[in-house]
View 1 (cartoon, one colour):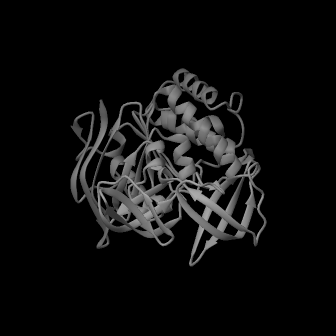
View 2 (cartoon, one colour):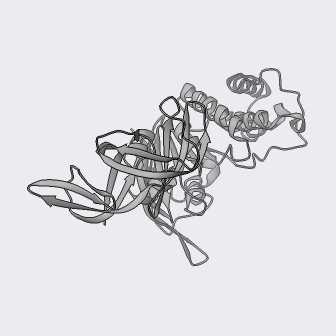
View 3 (cartoon, one colour):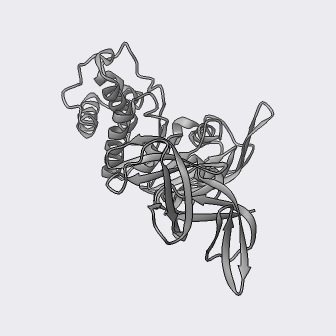
Length: 345
């Protein structure tokens, strides 16, 4: 069952179009990430769902009921901000209990619920701690516990891990998904970090300039990006002009270095994506590339290579047990057709 539905939502702020006819659904118990660069409309979408601002057009509904005219405090939605917004003058218990007190729950109920959510985020015994004494990761957990304490039907998280370093962010993203899954919590997770979105979400809505560029699971979006923009945003930068041609009943992909058989229903010019993984050193099948190693980054079991091929520079990930090239070396690679994706114009 779809819990949340947005249909043809548009929004302008100060005569600037922020969102343009976006539509998507979120199922009960599903974690959906709104992913995209800064300024693409992710946080504005959250504000519309929360009821902090109203759409210029379109409809937002929850379990089939329109949210138009329903104030934020009556929607039973939770919102966790990037800056966490913890109260520095209150301890951990009082921070988490704040929303429960606003609902006029009895003290025994508040104490029980605070204990439950602290156990959920693995902060048992932190009730009396000063929030200023907490680490960054502990503060994130307290903010999450506070957002979960009132048992919101929908939890919205706006860049909740943006201020953390990469290692801590990766660990907390996995913990956060585990917590949300354990609670069967319906959630919308806003981020500009694709690795974070892949770690947390069941499904991703990738946005660009106020429009939805692609919707799918992390696997679907990574394996089949819908456009050169999606590929580039996901870190796949090997894009080159190409053309689909037909010769003797066979479809071919023609690129600056030659042509290879390529199954395609379309014809004409476009852009080809050469995936950074899948290249084989000194292989004989597929597209043949020869270039000079401009840069090499060692990553343990693989190397990230920058390869200058004529006028083009490409990035590849090569297993280190196959080859250990040096900067300046000439390297020959073969790219199988399944590692190339064509985008028609």
